[in-house]
Image (cartoon, rainbow, N blue to C red; front, top):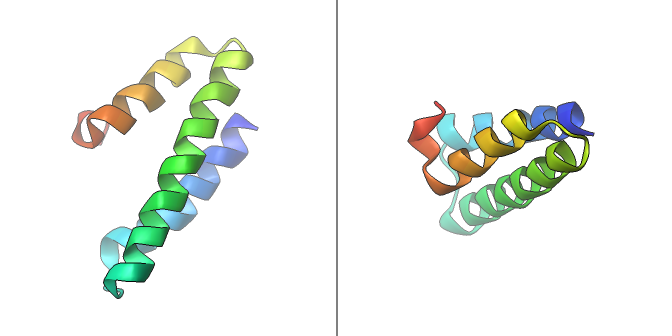
Length: 67
């Protein structure tokens, strides 16, 4: 689940970063990405992959910290 969530985040976030959308769609893309990142963090934590869970948490709080 963690890996699938990561791929989904990449799939949604990449176009949101490089393309121009109306503000409504842009907001929805970032909301979807944030919700999946939150889930991915919990998936990782529950799977005993705490380093990944921490990395996701840091990314949610400070996006530039992981990039």
